[in-house]
Image 1 (cartoon, rainbow, N blue to C red):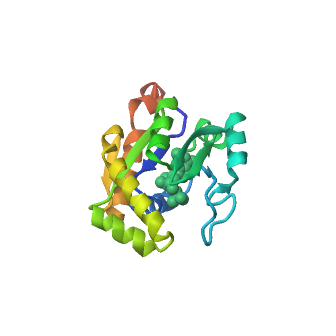
Image 2 (image 1 turned 180 degrees about the horizontal axis):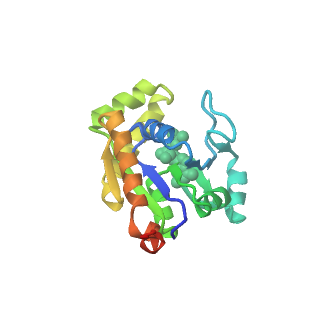
Image 3 (image 1 turned 90 degrees about the horizontal axis):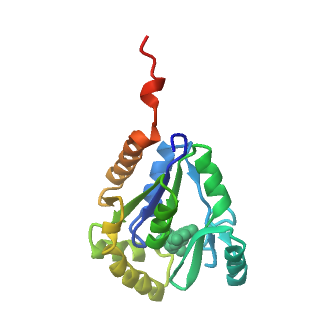
Length: 202
Ligand code: 5GP
């Protein structure tokens, strides 16, 4: 356990600003690792293959599951999303802290699989704030926004299944809180097993 990197997974409703919070956290932790997910969703404007996601057909996605290449996966608004197994395992076993943005089921699945997983639920300050952000983002049609808002209602009640909750009212404050959680987790005794014996007293 000592030298494994943390697997820090953020979840929360679409439009809550998980991506922006994560980007801010990554800026402060330049040595952290990124897991690029596989999805059957079509690329949005500006999204690059292998950077934002690996974009695959449903058939290709199902084949990856069959081959054991997907660590966890979920369906979200008519598409599949999954975490590739090899890169995540490799980074964490090399001591690299990996930051992820997953659905609730995805974060909880990682928590089941890895003792070094830390789950954080990002809450919106209000339902209206969420709607305003989703509309303002302008990346989805009205129909998809309605589906994402409906999904959000059923997601928020699951915040209690997570290790931590952070309300994204103020971006800088939310980033600071996530960084503090990571720092505290790294100080847990089980991540520093036997450290007191390695400390030089003479
Ligand atoms: P988007 O379509 O906005 O990029 O992502 C939709 C949702 O899929 C987000 O809530 C994001 O957290 C989730 N997601 C992205 N990649 C993965 C993944 O590999 N596994 C799971 N379980 N969820 C993912």
